[in-house]
Image (tube, rainbow over all chains, first blue to last red; front, side, top):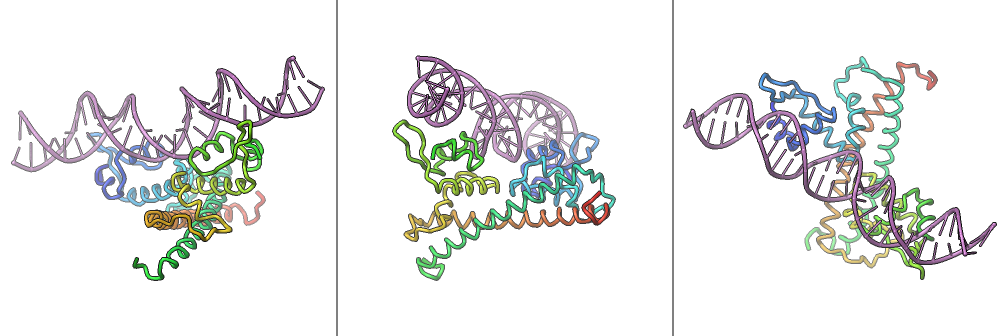
Length: 126
Length: 126
DNA sequence: TCGAACCATCACATTGATGTAAAGGTCCAC
DNA sequence: GTGGACCTTTACATCAATGTGATGGTTCGA
């Protein structure tokens, strides 16, 4: 599929698809005319990238962890260098920290909303 | 306390403390000589700000939700305008999405690490 | 009273993720 | 064969979160 379709199906600007490619997050073939030719699986991959970006991870890290996230995982373990393992472990810890922080604050907001909405009248009507 | 001590205790560059103030995230008094004079509670607040920033929230949003996160909560509810409630609800949903995404991916990484480390020998020694 | 270590403001640089525009090639339908 | 809708690359703009430096005031101890 070409970039336009991918953009539409993923809700991602073409500009960013090219950017992700430039950052090494996605790959594509080229048609004879030079047009990018994306694999079907790229749709999911872009979704995952966007999720991780939105979660606060930089492309640099996403690039490193993406290969480990492939679902039908090729267990031939591309190149699990000790360095990469270390990166993953660091990122794992960092993500857990992030999750904890987000969870704590989300719960606090939920609690606050509960209180506010309750004293505005239990029903969602106002 | 002055900015230097706050910087040290929070591990945050002075530059950023001034930036957070500029963004309305923290407040401080001024000594006679113009030096910033921070309240003890600012230490925790800065920690919270950093956590939220690291979790991917922009200062603009943090500014809105911070007042709702104060622990010994002043239940006199400053100004829970409908607009603010809406913002909070939006942010709540967004945070939940972020948390889900991070959790999914963290678990995937953890699983990957498990597999990799297992076939490198169960013990952490190598 | 001098220097070191603070503090202040102001301002410009950078980085990452984006927007947007310019200049041009390709393809298809009419 | 022309117009429009696609694609290409290049490059400059923006925004938020930071880094860094210039310039100068304050405090304090030697």
